[in-house]
View 1 (tube, rainbow, N blue to C red):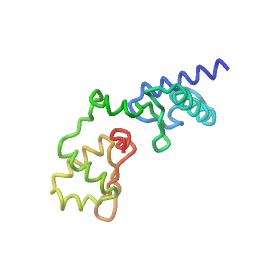
View 2: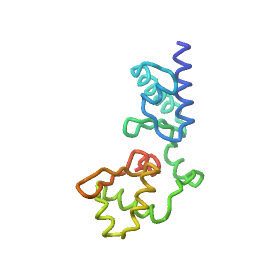
View 3: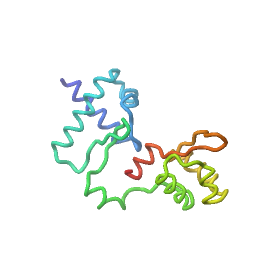
View 4: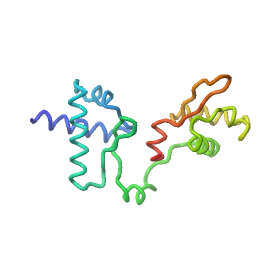
Length: 153
């Protein structure tokens, strides 16, 4: 029993320290907990603990990854305290377009925004907000789970 309590504290600490959502396998690796079944049980128990406390903080699951997050209305009221990702204005415009048109071809972006988008797409890809996949002679762009985490999409 005492070991279960320590495991929960260890998982909670890992979620607290991580700036990104973590998959259960990642948490297993970080904490040294070998069993994915035990990890999933711990995550569900932690979610239940936070819900029963009526806490301002919750453990959310996004694309099978977990993270600590503020509940509404606290996240809106305190969003000014969060650090914004360092994205150029042009890249932010491209990101907005890609998020509205997930799966858009890079060639379509060039027609809409001009050839300058190559640098913006590279920036967004390096920061983990979009993924590029070859599609014929162009690339298909999709937003990532990191985008969803940052922008609560």
